[in-house]
Amino acid sequence: LRIAAARLAGAMAKKVKMVQGKGKVLGRRTSLDHTALLRATGKAVNGKLLYENRALACHGRTVGQAISMTVDGQRYRSADLRYDLKMGRVELLKPNEKVGAAPKSKNRPKASKAGEDLPDATLDEFFQFLSCQLKIQAREHLQEEMVMPDKAAEALFPEVDKHVKPNLGNTERWVPYHTVLGVHELFLMEEVHNRKDWSEKQRFIAIFVFRAHCKRDLFLKAQVPLMTGKFWKDPAKFFADEGPMEKAIAAYRKKTKQALLTNCFRIIPERILKDNDANLVRSIVRRSARLMPLAESAFEIVKDAKLSAYKKLTQISKMIQDTEGCGDTWAKMLTVCIDLAYPQEKLLEADCDVGTGAAPPLQCLLGKKLPDRRQGLRQLLGKVNHAKSASARLFWTYLTQVEKATCREFRHLPLVQKQAKTKPGHMSAATLQVQLCEYRQFRHSVARHVYGLPDDATMRAEESCRISPENLVQCDKSRVFCEFHLESESRVVKMEVPIKAFASMKVASRVLMIMIQKVQGGASESEVAKLRDQLSQSYVHSEDVPDSSEAWRVCKAQLSGAAPVVGFHIEKKDGSMMPFQTTVMAADGNLLHAERIARLCFELLRSGKDKETVVKFRNEQYAKLKQLKSKRKRE
Image (cartoon, rainbow, N blue to C red):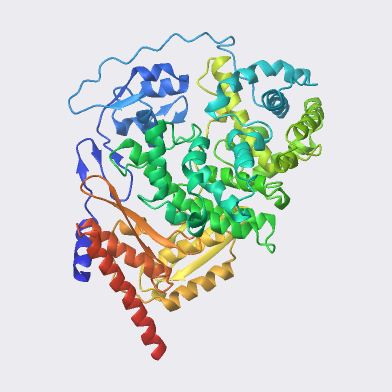
């Protein structure tokens, strides 16, 4: 098997299985054939002007041409195309199929100020928008019509109300000024944090269970009944493929036909199973399974009295962003939930992750672009809390009135009350971040309905600027090294790993990537240097896959969690995906060996070996490591 693994790795690393109209790369989502033609459908002209324009721009172009074009000043990406394909606004043509004429645009109501320039966003308008948010919040949650003292806010209110109304109710898209009164956040207050039969840790883990999909009925009817004694002993086990949670969610879907994901999520599930419903359920349980060890680790960090609020936030945020399928926006969403559950920790009082939706208005209101979004948020927070304009002063006055009424209405929910006791000039970073997202959507609405524009060009989401560890690694003949700016601490970090210590440039590079991730998560250079030396002492270079193998990219350990694993999926002949993993614990506690064994197994499975055979090979590799350890002890 070892000889087969080495030979097949070299041959298979260069091959990519292709089919007509789409290509498949094992371990990844199905890729699109860049030569396939696109056609806009009738659905393209029944939605937002922005979506209509980009769908019509795709009409008659190939996939490759479409994902390199610019529409209304915004680059059209492969993710945009996938979303438009999913929503049916664009479709892929079969070979030799004719494109035909593009669908005709519907007659849209003429905007009252079409042809005029959209005014710039200002801090005063932002305060007026916040007052409007409070008025709608009082109407929706308190059933009161509370008059705003700011006449400028009253003049703005009709447009804000017009924007918010379609997003109320089951759409789950509107977030009021007090985030805790958002649809999902208030649900957690009432159905999770208010429970007496769950322990503090169990309530914490339940946040992550719900947030994996954010569907309230699904959580209560399909998941909560399973969240009893056995579940709490090993939550991740319940989310295994074909496990209890997958069966319960599938049964719920079959019985109710209800959606399994909130409308707020624009997630296109990776194609794992042929059946659409089964595939969606599988994607939810796998996401949940990844979140369970994350929840366990985050709880320990929150309860660590030795860590400052800044350290806790930084470590939790980094763990979330390092989890497969998560990023800045997931970090923001989950840390906000944690902050609402633990207001005494003040995690997000002065600092907060900034999602992609908040970045453009942040830049607009600051009047400059900063490389570090969190630093920019702190600066804007200072401006907001020290503003002395009439709209600012009247906002704080109105906020006090609304919060008094809110405390009376929600006296049965202490965590809600704690969020409604803001001192004037003390807006939290979390509130500012969330409201920037809401403000951005409002500005887009005004641009479309009042000025006849596709959107507010100044509020377009920017490309992600997060630099991955892979892009920081450099090398010469004797070492791999990096030098980068650590934004959270405003300093330059320099690190290196000698290639000789690991007898492989690829392994040395992987060690450096791990060091970079640890530093970005809050560790010091001395701590990661110690980790590097420990890995060097315990690692013995053994057989491995070629440097060109896809396994180097796919087989990486998730660094968050108490028991790291190296997991990946291989596509089977029937189109379904087969999971496989190695564990650091079984690999004698050595992360590098766990990844190396996973790479060898990846190539064996790719070559067509059955899972049982490869599991046997994996276990033999584990046994060799134990024998090597015993031999070292005797020596």
